[in-house]
Amino acid sequence: MFKKLLLGMAAIAVAAGTTPAFAQNSPTLAKIKAAGTISMGHREASVPFSYMDKDGKPIGYSIDICMLFINEVKKELNIPDLKIKYVPVTSQTRIPLLANGTIDIECGSTTNNLTRAKQIDYLPVTFITGTKILLKKDSSIKGIEDMNGKTVGLSLGTTNEKAFKAAAAELKIDVKYVMVKDHPQGMLNLESGRTDAYSTDDVLLYGLASTSKDPASWKVVGKFLSYDPYGIMVPRNDSEFRLIGTRTIADLMRSGELEKIYDKWFNPGPTNINMPISSDLKKAFEIQALPH
Amino acid sequence: MNYNWNWGVLLDDPYLMWMYTGFGWTCLVAICAWVIAFTLGSIIGVMRTLDNGIARGIGTVYVEIFRNIPLLVQMFLWYFVFPELLPKDWGHFVKRGIPLPEFWTAVVCLGTYTAARVAEQVRSGIGAIRNDQRNAAIAIGLTSVQVYRYVLLPVGFRIIIPPLTSDFLGVFKNSSLGLTIGVLELTAQSRQITEYTFQGFEAFTVATVLYCLVTFTVMTLMQKIEGRTRIPGMLSLGAK
Image 1 (cartoon, rainbow over the protein chains, first blue to last red):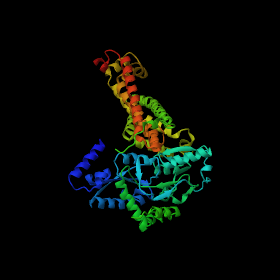
Image 2: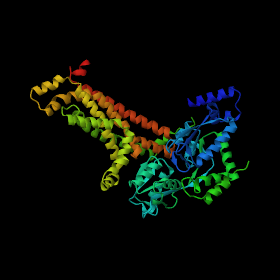
Image 3: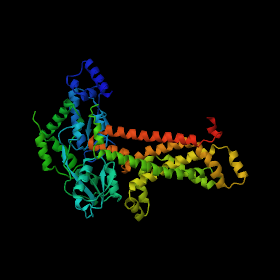
Image 4: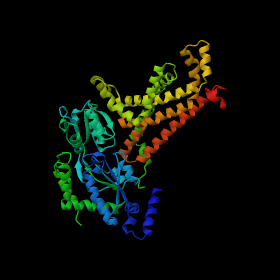
């Protein structure tokens, strides 16, 4: 039914005689053109990738990249006043909403992995992180191996949940899990003493700690329990649309613009997260800076 | 829609087991909450029909508080705020000491919320009985307890079987809110499967069918019970 609607929209656009050739190949571009609007999925508390400022507007590292991508879409479609519809998503809703066409692009903190790639496509890797553990500063826990009998909060439906449980199973230790629906709830559980630790991507842990009431009372420990490269998500089977994104990001990487955007958000960043660019990420930027 | 359907994934290990345990938790939360709701709700409902002004006042306050605060908010209040109001040791016990703190929090929250609804049904059930019956019962020398036990409640409960059925179905469906505080019931497990396999539409379809099956079964059962317990010539039941 939805497909028919899209086809219908595309047909109208074609009939109007104003549509360049690519819109016929790209259902996403055809849809955006017909609606005059692009729907952008964003997170509400993925600091500093995608979160809300004091006025309730989404801001962050991923949002900045997405905005440049949307600018390219504007040029491509020749719609200077293209409207942006902001749709808040969670770690559970982001993939279904993208797959069913509610959002055209997801700008958050999403790990690019192969299972997810069965439903959606990714733009080039723009950040690299991994699972670590957040604790009270005075805790004696040094890593997952000290977590036997302890309680840890995990965000339902994240790659970190899988990684933590797999690591615990491998070490044959008994950890109690408290599932939370988002990062602030995980932090709240930790602050109220319901859990001993909270585990997710290390950058998000630094972000949570830096925006908490007492940033100095927290520490991030352990070695990486997983490898999590982040990417912006776009609909699957739409190489025209994805190409615009790949081109935008490759240009940003080649010109060094992306590193500036990185510094704006992470070094030290508005929330004082203080994470200078890692050598891995710097290398990744260089490798992915494809020539024209 | 750009989606790869794959129904077989739900039969794979461990996803079948997840669905099964999720369904189990949903039923368990609903049944435990209903026990609280029915017991507490009946007491509060009766209190609201008593002559004693204090008892009526307590009943009214209870109903107004629990019926007027959104269930999701209540869930968070019980989970995050309630333990902080207790003395430190007790709060710690509620958060960490009891086994399955999320489960019991969800049960208590759903139970007390639904009790307010049940109380209103019980009150209206008793209110629907003509006052002559109460007067007649008092006239033959029954005590207050006996008036309720032998005259008002047996008839009142029969009248409210259909709305009580709705309330039970409500508890059953509202149990899905338990996932917001980490109870891994049917909806939470469907989400979990979605995140592991990205086959969310399949998982949620099965969850929907399971919810419908239970509500349909309960409805059929309650209609049977309603028919069995009917007293010919009594009040609204006489219309049929």
